[in-house]
Amino acid sequence: MTKGSKKRVLFLCTGNSCRSQMAEGWLRNLAGDRYEVFSAGTRPQGLNPLAVRVMAEAGVDISGHTSDPVEKYLGQDFDLVVTVCGGAKESCPVFVGRVKDRQHWPFDDPAGAMGTQEQILAVFRRVRDEIRARVEAFLNETPACPGGGGRREG
Image (cartoon, rainbow, N blue to C red; front, top):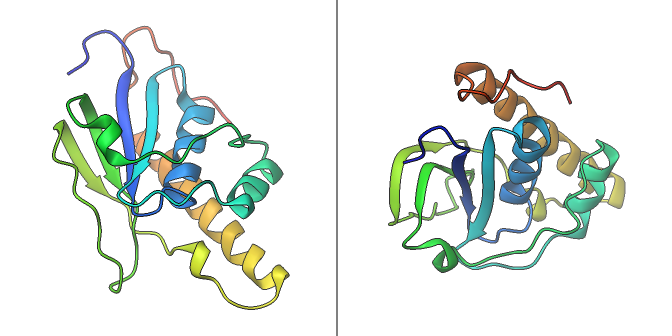
C-alpha cells in the first residue's frame, strides 16, 4: 500500500476513548518517523480523561487526539488495522476498508474498571503498560522502512 513512505496503521475499537487512543499515542511516540497512525471506533465516546492522564504520566501527550468514527477512514488504504478490544463480552469491530494486514491485540477495557479512583487508575496504568509492551514487540518484529532508521527508545 505504501512504498518508500510511512506505513499507515489504524487502531480500532468500539469507543475510541482509551485503548485505541493509547495504542495510537504509543506508536506515534515510539515510531512516528516510520508510521502514520490513526485510531477510530464504531461508537466513538470521546477521549477518556483517565487515558490522557496515565499517558501523560508516561510522557506521551494524547490530549489533542480526537475520538473518530470508523466511517471517517472507509475508502482509505491501510497497511495494518489492529483491533484492540478484549474480553468475551465485547464484540470487536470489523474494518471493511482496503487493508494489507489485520491483527488483533486483546486488551481489557480500562473504562469498565470499578473501585476507588486509585484502583481505577491502576487498571488504566496496567493497560497502558501492556499496550506499550505490545507496540514495542510489534516494532521489534517489523523491519524498519527504508530510510526510517531503527526503533526509538521511549
